[in-house]
Length: 103
Image (cartoon, rainbow, N blue to C red; front, side, top):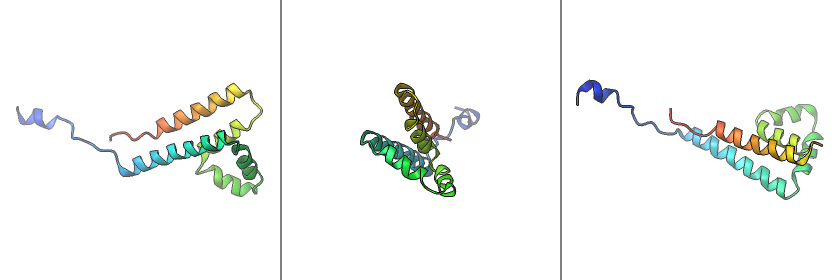
């Protein structure tokens, strides 16, 4: 094998610990979301968040956007099939978006 052929082989790349930890955080938060949903505690949490002063609510929306959006949709008056579909799409979409990939 020539040096040119050997140099064209891609180097093995690993997932970074930060990406793996972030993905674990995302999945863990979705697990907590669904635990609260099935325990009928999600609406109480959403009410408590909505009762906060606007500035604090905005501060919570920034780091927890996917889950806040999921709570907002789930507690809306839309039909149940639409709410469930959207929340599952949020879960899959955000988890897939932050799935660790090789560089």
